[in-house]
View (cartoon, one colour):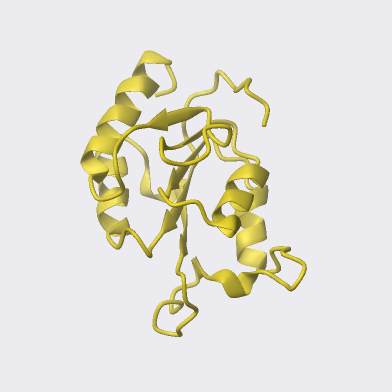
Length: 151
């Protein structure tokens, strides 16, 4: 991963969430909005460990079935997310799973942030907390984004 990132302000935000460990994506989005990120500027995809139809009822959900037998992502929605040039990618997962790591690694986002429990080479900035404390995560994130003049 390239360790140099842009000086641009954060406008477009990608949010990659592992719903097997965190179920309150709406709360996380609300906190982002309350910190000045516009709702229409947030693109979210949600990973589920299983591909039950009730989990995948929204257009922004995916599972391991998004991989083909070669380990390539074949779900167009996921590939579109990877190709999007986000100003900020929030990797909201604390357990390493191959598909999540691949999305993070391949993402075209300019600035990536995630949890300290995940491979530190994947993100430009890491936050030491857990997924069940989204307010702590976002407080730390926005504190440092302000210091970096990103917002």
